[in-house]
Structures are given as structure tokens and as C-alpha cells.
Length: 300
Image 1 (cartoon, rainbow, N blue to C red):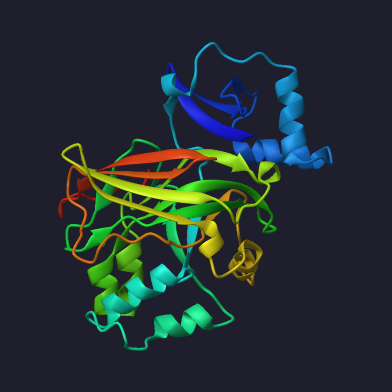
Image 2 (cartoon, rainbow, N blue to C red; image 1 turned 30 degrees about the horizontal axis):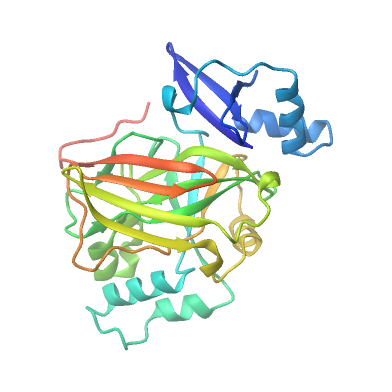
């Protein structure tokens, strides 16, 4: 069972999507409201939504006919780093100017008990399906990072899974690890979506395929695949460090790390399109736009 949010005639609608693709609008403002009602009734989110759907009629249009928007207004998006072997290799390459046999602090964090956890985005910096993701004006080596995202509540319970694009500047992080915030956080540097896959409906979240495709001038220029079974750490372990001595808001998303990295000579360009697919969740598509130095985001 998936949860989506879409726009129809200026209205945003939250809906359940069953395995056959039928869409059932739900009488809620957002996903967290659904989870709170389920908890109040002492039932699982899946059972709660299935009960709601059983008393509703599906709409007469399908997923291809709706304008999807970001499925949840995540107050914060956090990310875990160096959780896959591929990520460790890429970070080492950046930090050592290509000396792959050199040992770095990335090797240490990969093997350490404590994972790397950092703030990636906030609700005003995060976009959804088909919205532009930006590349920085002061970086020459930028890539998408396809990741499985965990949607959690304030107690650290994993409520659902989604797809995340953790846009990254490899040259900025490689120059100095203290530049990590600038290598990771800027306007529209994170996308999530297109749906929320209820955690209760997933038999094994360590057997999810992840596919990343990048198109340039309508031509496929990169495709990579991986599987969440390659993740070194467990989801509960990552969440336990996220919530430790921390304030976490309901609906926070924790990205679990990347296992797909384009070739070292590749960088995103203005006009590219990134697709990240987890078949059970869907395809997160985002056009790429180069941010101009003069563009300034003013918070509302």
C-alpha cells in the first residue's frame, strides 16, 4: 500500500494507492494525520488505511493522469553517509585525488560503531516529483545520490519508505570535509517521492532494487543499479543515532546512503533529467537546473 499526494484543480489531495494501481482519496490533510489516527485506534497504519479504503470508491483516473507533488512535507531531511562500499570508494577518491589505496577517515567511519548522520534539507529546500533540482553555481563536479528514505515519527518509528535524491558536490566535499554542509545543502538540493510505501506492507526492506538513470538531450548517459541488501548498517541502527539526544519531528525523512555513483569524470549539467526508481515505490523524476549566483531564496 502506497500513499501519494497530488494536485487537482488547485487542491492537494492525499490518497492511498493499492497494488492494482487504484487511487482512493483519503479525508486527511497529510500522512502524519493518518498515522496519528491509526495509533489512537491502536492498529497498524496498513490495517487502518485498508479499512478506510474498504469503505471508499476509487477515482476514475490513474497514476499517469495525476500531477504528483511531494508526498510529505518533511520538516527535516537527514542523511547517513558512507553506508555502502561504493560510497566509501567514491568519498576516498574525492579526498585523495584518486589515490584509491590511501586510507582516509571515510574508511574509519565505514567501520566505526557510530555512523555518519548529517542534516541534508528542510521543508523549504526539498522538492517533489518533476520539480527542478538545482546544481550549485560554484561547483564543477556534481552528481545525484539515489537513496532509500525512511519516514519516521518523533519516537523513531519507521512509518514508511520513500525515494530520495541527495544531490552532492564531489569537488567541494573532496577539497575539505569541513565543507560538507556546502557540498550537501542549498536551494532545491534534495528531492523525495513519488510516494510513501507503508512500512507495514514491506516484507523485506533489505531486498529493494534501486535504479538511477540520467538523461541528457533525451539520451541515456548513465544507468546504475544496486540493492538495499548491500547496505552495511541496519535501518533501526541509523534511526537510533538520529534520535539520540536529538529532537526529531513527526514526518522527518532519513536517507540511508547511496550505493550508485556515476563515473568519476561525470558531472550533472543544466537540462539533464534524473530518474531514481525503486519499483515498489515508483520513479522519482527531476529536471536539473543550474542555479545562478544571483538567485536568492527568501523564506516565506
